[in-house]
Image (cartoon, rainbow, N blue to C red):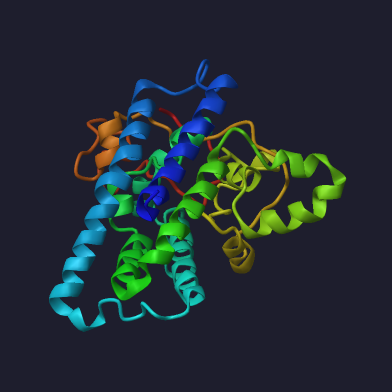
Length: 293
């Protein structure tokens, strides 16, 4: 099978398999997802890999060929380990900071908000964000630049590994439980949970409130690598899973408002998506409060 096709097929297959496992486990039978939740999840699942990411890569390539043709494939013959390190730093680490910024900046939060207002986990949560959250994501642009510079071969292997880890971190399969169940595996768990994102650490990020002693909604920002949280002081590891998910500002909006904000805005004055700045904007410094919908 062609390497490029395989790179795309692996995450798609993982998504399908994990989704089936979740469905068999009953996640989607009595779930809390509304019709709008289903729609934005499916639209996001299609738009990012088929439209946004390819468009950024094509535009980056065009800019490179027009203005910087001498740098095409400039690092093609560099040791592959340096290629991998470049993606880890310029894609995954920058995504950590982009994600962290979306929880500290109220404007950024509105683009990331769809990812958190859903009240349960599962692989379908993975990509749900406003489209502009991805359009402006530095890591995608940096990846396009690195590919132009000759690092595309490594990206074909890097991307499915990254997406696989992220899908598993959102999955209700909670694959990491087996490491916590058996004492002999605890040393392995100690390493794994500090290197990559796991359901336990990422579920904590999606938890509703830190009052439960497990959730960490303003931390555990790592996407593929959790080690960024360890290095930059935002890690919380409990080996447990929250029972309540979401964000305190949970006014339900049509999927197209969530997905297209601020191009399309809410008609409801009480909604934080009604305008770029509202009196009801989510405040990341407030852990949890009862919000009057």
